[in-house]
Amino acid sequence: MLVRALLLCLSIFLLSPKSMADLPDFTGIVDAASPAVVKILVEYESENPRYQEQMEELPEYLRRFFDFRGGPPVPRDRAGMGSGFIISEDGYVVTNNHVVENARQVVVRLPDRQEFDAEIIGTDPRSDLAVLKIDADRLPMLTLAADDDVKVGQWVLAIGSPFSLDFSVTAGIVSALGRSLPTQTGDNYVPFIQTDVAINPGNSGGPLFNMDGEVIGVNSQIFTRSGGSIGLSFAIPASVVSNVVSQLKETGAVERGWLGVSIQDVDRALADSFGLDRPRGALIAQVGQDSPASRAGLEPGDVIIAFDGEAIETSADLPHVVGLIAPGTKVSALVVRDGKERDVAVTVGGLGADEVARVDAGVAADGRAALLGMRLEQAEPAALAELGLSGGVLIKEVIPGSPAEEAGIQANDILTRLGNRPVSRLGDIADITPQLSPGSSIPARLIRGGSPLFIGIRIPDAD
Image 1 (spheres, rainbow, N blue to C red):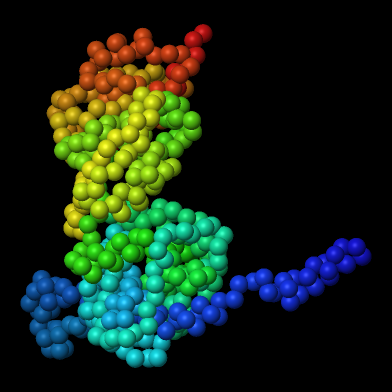
Image 2 (cartoon, rainbow, N blue to C red; image 1 turned 90 degrees about the vertical axis):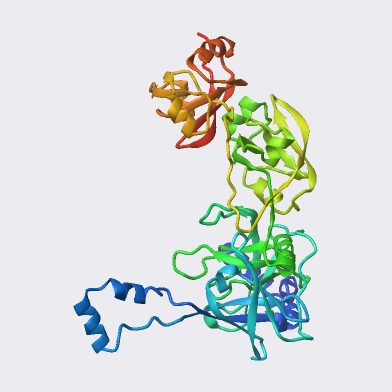
């Protein structure tokens, strides 16, 4: 009886007018913002335009058969759709790159069902953003939030056209911030806002609002096993949108900040070995030859814990910050080197829209590796030259149960550095071994599969 009474009281409370009044009211935002949200109708080029080329590859008797039948079927254009929103009275529209990529024709439909042919001003696959232009004026428009003052747990609202259901409204909360979702080409410049707002196919490119009616993001991706929403959606933050859109409007392309380093996360063992209080920062595994990082004096083994005043908690945070900095800007990098913090002045370089981020190691990029419990031999000069290294030691065998195995060292790894000392040849090992302190952790740098990798190895305690 007591349980029933408590449940009854709880239900009365939940349905009371006061409780209902505490819930957010989205109607004002919808009324003010929805006129500037648009539907994007797209016709794509056919998926297989090679039918003529394929015809020429057919035997003569088959070509005659197709000629008699009227030829092979001509591929039809594919249709698609998405969402977007107007950002200026004179007709600039923001949407996702993947909505208009490979489009033959793009049409923008307003909520009052007016339709306009759209010109693609510019696209940016790295951020999945695109800017369109329609020939109209005195249009309703939306405002991008001035900063990324977004908090986990706050209410947010989305407007779009899921499954072609025009101008639908859904709401939820921010689930997480700074989500790293690298593209298929490995680009990782967007710290996505994660929400539980119901986003479905067709919502792509639509706005995500805060309770002030400002656009805090552009809905871009969902995680799903069914093709529909399961409460995991991701939006591009307003700061990224503002940066990309302004460049696309001005030049039609986007240039990003670039350092020229290969980085990795810092685990507990590496944190101990580098003298960090906890796992954090972006560990530089390799510095490109003649890169902005090289010219600034950054080194393999440096752990970047802040860049341009922004804390770097994981390696994924670094490209998020660097990518938004205008090339040529001089900033400060706070790094941990040899257990001590130091400021390094860095002039950020530029990565063009069509350029691929590569780290050229040059003649030799020194690093670190693991040692105890391994059988080693001098690496072949030809193999080292192919990797751009002037020296290194090949790990032929890792002894089961050894510190090397526990650290994750593998046979065929190339050891290039151990602790604070480079390893160029077998003779270097004899110089380093006596300096290893029992019970300590040291960083080690390997080349595995052609890529540099740092691993922390713990030296066993003395018997």
